[in-house]
Amino acid sequence: MPRINLSVKEAQSFAPIPDGTYPAEVSGFSEVQQGPKSSYITAELTINDGEHSGRKMFTNLPLEGKGAGITANFIAKCTGNEIEVGEDAEDLDFDTDDLIGSQVQIVIKNEEYPEGSGDFRPNVKRVLAPGEASKATASSGGGSRRRR
Image (tube, helix red, strand yellow):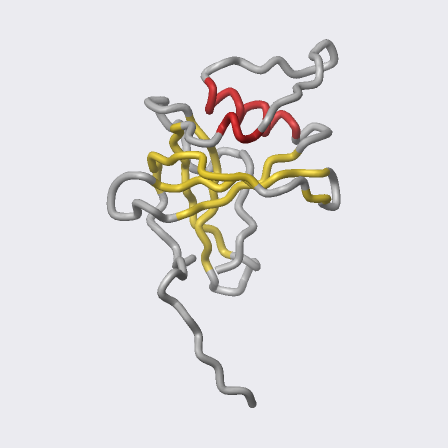
């Protein structure tokens, strides 16, 4: 078997953090990816205050179909501008670079994945505007699929 030298100086822990609402900054986006139901991008959100400051979380944002409403909501929380959705709404053309640096809050809930494994991972359940009160940590929204 091979002997390895694992460099962990820049590694980030993917261990669970307590469920709750954390202040965060939009710090990056992936390229467009093709999923089983639609294309999507992954937003990188960096917790920017408290004990977990610097911790990066990820949430997938669908770009088409019913799930595109999740992305419209994400953009609205980042910009403070309501995004119209539905049959009469026009497609939205935007540059993700314009959202980098946006201040938001993220609602984290630890979930067992895969189910029955005993392995819990923090999941972004909602993205809120700064100062917006969280109604429930179990609300639906984009989810993290990042392995730890």
